[in-house]
Image 1 (cartoon, rainbow, N blue to C red):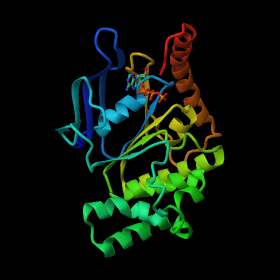
Image 2 (tube, protein in one colour):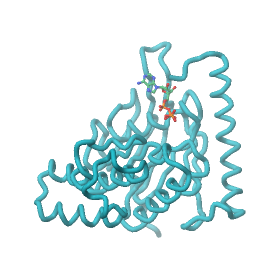
Image 3 (tube, rainbow, N blue to C red):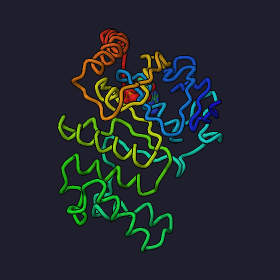
Image 4 (cartoon, helix red, strand yellow):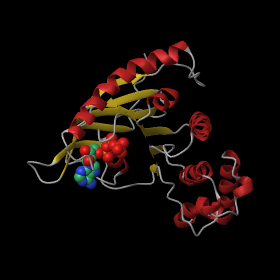
Length: 268
Ligand SMILES: Nc1ncnc2c1ncn2[C@@H]1O[C@H](COP(=O)(O)OP(=O)(O)OP(=O)(O)O)[C@@H](O)[C@H]1O
């Protein structure tokens, strides 16, 4: 009999309400979700459905109003070194070079100089940043900056990587090459990834599992395992069949979002 793998992230009955009740915005409602080690989970849905709220709750940035949220069997009460976050805006220190940005977290942690040099070299190599190590963020393209942001999180070696639309601001070609790189890293270093996107194509290309959220209140509409082998061919019949299936689910939520907008409700 197969031993049961314990979930790394466990949400049970999670609710998040912004503002005073009644009248507050119910961003998450009754979220039950278990994420096992090594999964690549994409949270998918239209703008305003609570993807970032759920990610920020797992990160410990903004805790649920009620319900149970645990990482490694411990309640989430604050951010921790077991969870690294990559944002859409690269969040790099503009006054530091590429290598200093990557080394920063390790220096704060008190890691020895030689070990820092080894880790930084390895990561710059892995992410194709070696030639850019002495540059400042302003002298890099968006794609390069996001590589540095990913290297910076990987330097601290957290078991869980939380990514909030990290490739949303990139052009299509750069985006695909970073997606491929992320998949390579995920498969070689064995991280658990929770990745927010509103792109159906991106979710099907990356995720071992896609969790679709409903629009206001954010609930889990469908949790789908994507069984296609990696690397995936986005032109294949199988890929497009899954994309189509997910699209009809997401579009129903998107229509509710647009209706809300037409009614003049604010979407922040
Ligand atoms: N700090 C806040 N105060 C009040 N309402 C908020 C706050 N943060 C988020 N919300 C609301 O909660 C809901 C979910 O927002 P969230 O940002 O999680 O959605 P999302 O799916 O990540 O959207 P997007 O793709 O646009 O980032 C939205 O209706 C949003 O307006």
